[in-house]
Length: 273
Image (cartoon, rainbow, N blue to C red):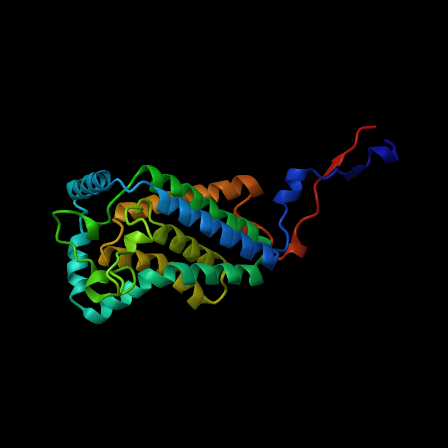
């Protein structure tokens, strides 16, 4: 064999470059998040309202859950609604932590796990993107808006965020109230929880990560927002997000190098003489 038979670095390919973990740039990430959330909001809120169809879908889901003995949303809603301090706290939890915790986890990943940030962020973005399909093609009334049922709209009762504004204009004017399937409260909270449970070092932070999606599920049921089947839809979307990132980066996002400097060198292949 000659020296030319020795392994040499393969020329970089465009896709290989895109798949290689790299240090995230703050300005780009902020721009990406802003644009993505703007597009998400526009498409979600532009989905046809179709109230009759949304009510029909809600009734079907309720009847299905009842047929398998798991139509428990109304019982939980009525039980928790009687404890004012608890349900008001849950109303604000539902309205705020959905965004606050997700952004906090993204910031933590950016600073503490830059090598894993891009792939883990891709999971979140792919999850949210596929959820838009459900919002557009499957309008669904949440329990609190179902006709002929006695769910308590806890946000309206206590005049917290998501209820009637001071002028009496419903939130429907700024948000599609029938975009309930799948539940991104569950999709995003489970993404946060898994990320913290797997990557965080302090045991208490891992525990909080494990409890966060479970508590979020309790909150959405108690406040008569998405059905638990909507939560299942959110989980399916999240699984799709992980699959997209796994196929693109070649491994599970959490198994990528923590630091960009720890990334393995480009694959080398023999060059034919």
